[in-house]
Length: 210
Image 1: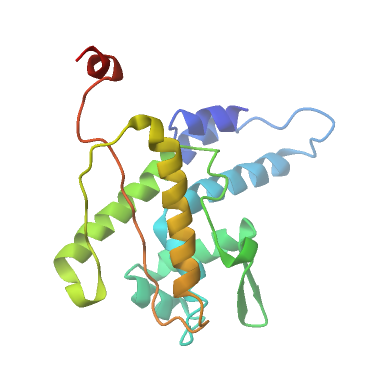
Image 2: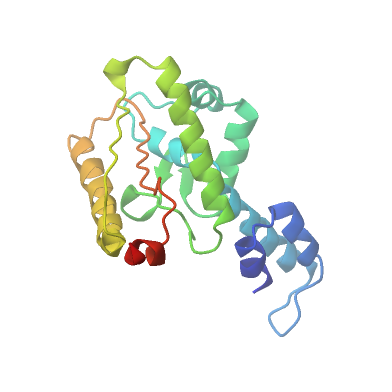
């Protein structure tokens, strides 16, 4: 409960550690190691949700030219070798990646990782989306238009349709993912970011009064 409330309030893993320092109480407590293990897994899950390259590493596995080499992965994603090593260990601990006899296996359901334990924290989700949008801006400036797509549309809507609109966006993401992965021979890892938000600041009550 402390973990859920703390993450919901936007506390960092370091802040949460202060609440997890005491030993677990009750019949299931086995000693301080149990608390430390729980704390580590909680922090790992937080980081997986919050940092984009965890998902990218899982997707890299599906490339035909994938190399199970931290140096190659780091170069492919534009991150450091240390970040790769930490992320790989973390993915294994939370059960999303299996490495056996040199073979890397994505163990997410159906091979598609969504926001793992996304209901656990909103702050981690916000951090992930900030990173994705920042990378989108960088791609806008640095990547040729022939291999990217940046478009937008402004529209007047009835906010009562928002639930269905969100569901249609979710369905679109899934259908596009299925379409692009249909031949089973991916050559690149792409990121899809769909933003749908209000640009006006009109309250519903004000709209009804007009």
